[in-house]
Length: 152
Image (cartoon, rainbow, N blue to C red; front, side, top):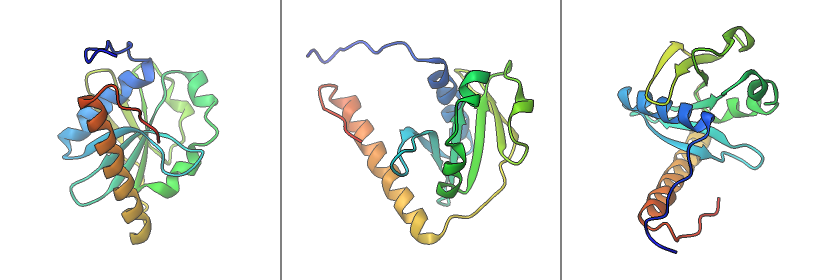
């Protein structure tokens, strides 16, 4: 397999995730995409802040995408704050008022409403920071070596 493998075009949710990640960086957060906090869940974006705070952002590209998500409440126990990220055309009245809201596009985002803070227990925070670090390292290695097989 050649080292210059072409990447497939990004899907709408992935474009939102890119804009969200860029915006989080402006808040001194680093982020990873598609992290698995526990079996059966995969978050779109997880941000790690300068004081160890953990934010989860679920990117929804359409009404149908949101309405088919029946697992999002399971993410709440894995973060300090939870957000939805949607584009400017999304009907935001569908989103629960007691969650964070980010309006995003492929290039940037803006936090419209902060998600309520619910501090993680220290043991859970340690587990999540370790998962974050391992996930980021695997992704960095895969970027350097596209022939590497990634398993999560």
